[in-house]
Amino acid sequence: MERELLRVEDLSVYYGEVRALEGISLRVFENSAMVVFGSNGSGKSSLLKAIMGLVPYQGKVFFKGKNIDSLETHKRVALGISLATDLKNLFPYMSVEENLLLGAYRRGGRERFEKVYEYFPELFEVRKRRVGELSGGYQRMVSIGRALMSSPELLMIDELSLGLAPKVVERLAQVLLEIRKKEEVSLLLVEQEIYDVSSVVCSHGYVLDLGRLVAQGKVKELLEKDVVRRVYLGIA
Amino acid sequence: MEVILQLLINAFLLGGFYALLASGFSLIWGVLGLINLAYGSFVLLGAYSAYFLHQKGFNFWLVLFINLFLGFFLGLFLNRLLFLRLLRFEALSVLLLTFGLDVLISNLINLFFKGDVRSVSLEGLGGSFFLGEYILPKGRLLVFVLSVFFILLLYLFLKHTKEGRAIRAVSMDRVGAQLCGIDLGRTYDLSSALAHSLAMFSGAFYGLLQGFTPFDSGFITLKVFFVCIAGGLGRVEALLLGGFALAVLEQFSGFYVGEGYKSAFALLVLFLLLAFRPYGIFGVRLHERA
Ligand SMILES: Nc1ncnc2c1ncn2[C@@H]1O[C@H](COP(=O)(O)OP(=O)(O)OP(=O)(O)O)[C@@H](O)[C@H]1O
Ligand SMILES: [Mg+2]
Image (tube, each protein chain N blue to C red):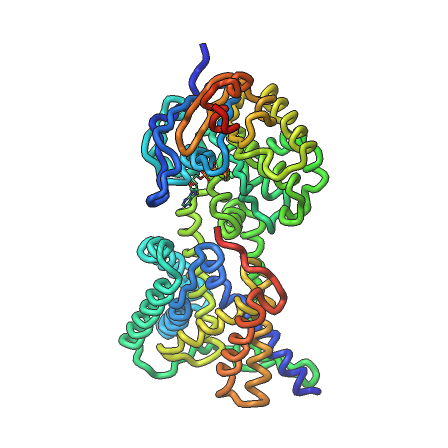
């Protein structure tokens, strides 16, 4: 049977008075790819940050059956969770290679370089360049590459397609499919648009609206649900 | 012409020392994002410790080592006791609290050592070498060589070791560093320990170069602040640039205007820099805080 990798139970995130997430429960299985859709400000980034321990939250998060609520971010990384943020959070004055190497600070190791350069051959070409000088597309690859350096069991990516040309996005989707084939890794993506790269990579999805989960199911069938059409298309 | 060259030689020797003097201050600012106004009093603590131990007959090299060691643990202690708490505070509160700490340490030093001017003098470092017509005082030359050597060590540590890379990562992007599995608390501990180690270590050199009293810490903090602003934060090379900038300014204003005006000049230039070139004379950008 499918084994559970991540379980989120009744998760809420507040920023002072602002409610970003309320009562979220979801599961990600081993060797699966899951996507959470949600429009601007619906709480997608807050969800990933909470799982990573970057923001305070109420509720419970389990990873491989173990409750990780009391663990700081670096310890969650050590367990095998990895996040590539939408802001990328790279080290601009360091080379591509140094950025990648830091990705293996806690887990993984130098031997992961080969894997990452295999997925992103173009990064090998610019490995000595400073990350701050690279284009957005390259920086996105560095951020995903860095997240892969720790050989995570759960790889989370915040808005893969944000601000990138469609060609680059397609290419990244192909790489994600390749990674899924070659490594024991599960994906948890968040995206704004329902028909996006994620539907190529992920079969199942959730829909987030104003901090609550309003639907789940096969990505292809999500748009047929009334509640999703209401949220996304403004039709009932 | 000879005068100018001699002043430049002096500035060159002094600048290397200033770079080391400011390295700890720069580290805390860059990594923890704190401006530590008590920094000067830790340098003084190093000077007094050197003075005291040397008087008790300790070998100067051993004194340097003890200072490194003492500074390391003081820095660790200070980080746990104060800095980690200050991270959540507004910048102004941090300035006030570290200023208070500075006053406290200065007065404690005064209590133990009285207010007289002290200095550390080493046998055999009194004379000078001569390069044609130019003078290279032995004491300053030794301090310069050791300073540059330790700056180089710091550079290699930050650039090529795992912990050093983690320190640089935290200074550039705290969230990114955490996402790599770096323990922020541990990195702050190590940075503060290293910074105060460097402060006390360079304090012994400070005592070799000039006389000092318990209330000089403000001047020292002003110097290191100047070095960081002039050179820019975040790179070891910037320390050398900033150090030389301060030394040139001091040497020339001291010679042509008068010793008593050196600090006034440094303050004036610091003001102009902050107003017009907040990223340093050489344009090295401050790292953005995460
Ligand atoms: N640090 C913060 N302080 C206060 N409010 C915040 C903070 N971060 C997010 N919010 C608010 O929480 C809500 C959810 O934000 P979040 O960034 O999680 O949404 P998102 O779905 O990722 O949005 P986007 O599509 O813009 O990335 C929004 O209303 C946002 O304004
Ligand atoms: Mg977001």
